[in-house]
Length: 122
Image 1 (cartoon, rainbow, N blue to C red):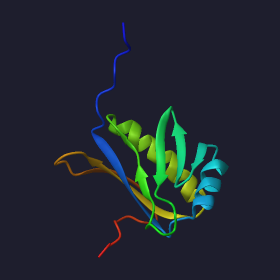
Image 2 (image 1 turned 180 degrees about the horizontal axis):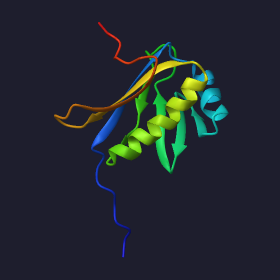
Image 3 (image 1 turned 90 degrees about the horizontal axis):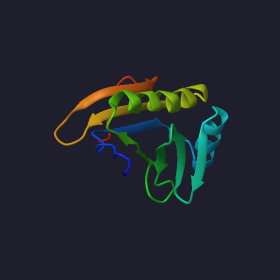
Image 4 (image 1 turned 45 degrees about the vertical axis):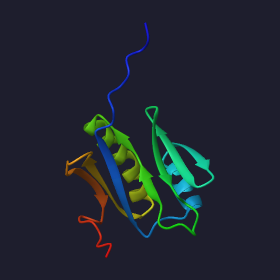
């Protein structure tokens, strides 16, 4: 009998950092906090409980990096965000991770360090 599949992710994270650490700094920050990390050509990817938490589109010529992290379990997603937030906080990086419900959902959670509100992107 095949293993049961998890439901599709209902929640995702959006990230702000001010300023964004360089790719090498992000790699060092996450490793220093004991996270399992992989360097990819344009990404830094952490593995937490077998789930991917990836800062992608690092390249300097693209734009600020983006976060790729989602889950069908909101509490687990926020727990993982908290672990990465702790690493960034220990390094003194001002940041905010917002959890959003996919589809027409709204903001459902937040983890941050010295950034209680989202920055104005305009």
